[in-house]
Amino acid sequence: MRLIAPSILSADFTNLSQQIKYAEVGGADFIHCDIMDGHFVPNITFGPLVVKAVKRCTKLPLDVHLMIENADRYIEQFAKAGAGYITVHQENNRHLDRTVALIKSLGVKAGVAINPATPVNTLTEILEYADMILVMTVNPGFGAQKFIPSTLRKVAELKEVREKSGYKYLIEVDGGVNRDTAGAIADAGCDVFVAGNSIFGSDNISASAMELKNLINR
Image 1 (cartoon, rainbow, N blue to C red):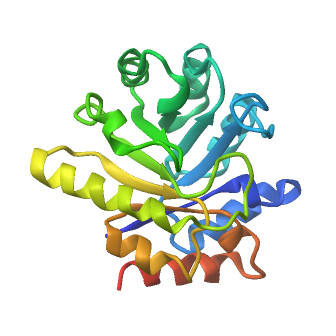
Image 2: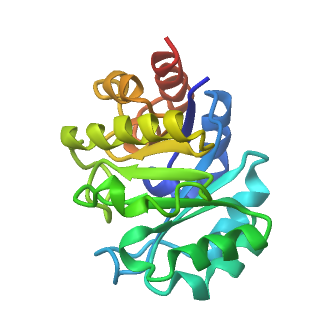
């Protein structure tokens, strides 16, 4: 069963609790929280206080994606706020093994993300320990961007490596996921589909989430 993780980056924050409930009705498996600091990416979103508030709104696991500098300083705060997964970027975490170990020591599953221009082989030494690998299929920082098709090669490569090595990580895709791109992403080997604008930007959040989930599980 492939999973969907609606991203609240595209939600209406004046009615966030209800919007999350609509996503749940549509079959959401995770709630994805994009954390941006205006340094690693050119945008600022929110921090642990909002994640803690989201946790009170749902029983679904929170999939927290840290697009921030000095992630190690904030991991414990996000863990205490209720994160089920915490994903950090390969590109700006110099001691990635230590960071992944820190996340796991707090009882949270650890993910590692790579940007569109970052090759899979930069993750060789961490794949054994990661619970999730996030392939960015747009350049991070803003929602509603156009999907970059060449990134599908990395999804397929991660699937092949997992099968050959017996690793257990989930493969997640974030960026430009919608009804037009979901089929190709599923065929490449994705397990978890992050979708923001295509779910929360629609007139019917529940129906859009359900449509995406049905599409990827055909």
